[in-house]
Length: 142
Image (cartoon, rainbow, N blue to C red; front, side):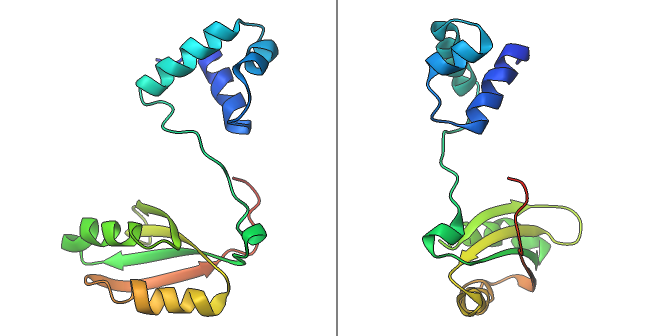
């Protein structure tokens, strides 16, 4: 179970995963060893799954971002989800309830490349019934 200090450490790491433990300790008024032990414990418990980098896709030439809903034959849900995970341009895959059984986020250079991914890579996966793309105009919060 996490307490308010764990939550404060997590909040700071979510803002900047490269923040040194000494800086976290200074900001929270606790020792560096306390921060280190708490982070190690949260890693062991699976609370912290990984440290990562958040990339702005437009800065690396990927100008078209789409949220794509995918409907599948129910018996093929897990198989299709796994195949979507194997496509490099598909950055996020989740099974869901609501309008679509699977939700994905796809990063491409432009609309033409997105169309190619949808038709040649995703559209050919056995079990897919419908693909519903929506182009992201502006991401306001991550």
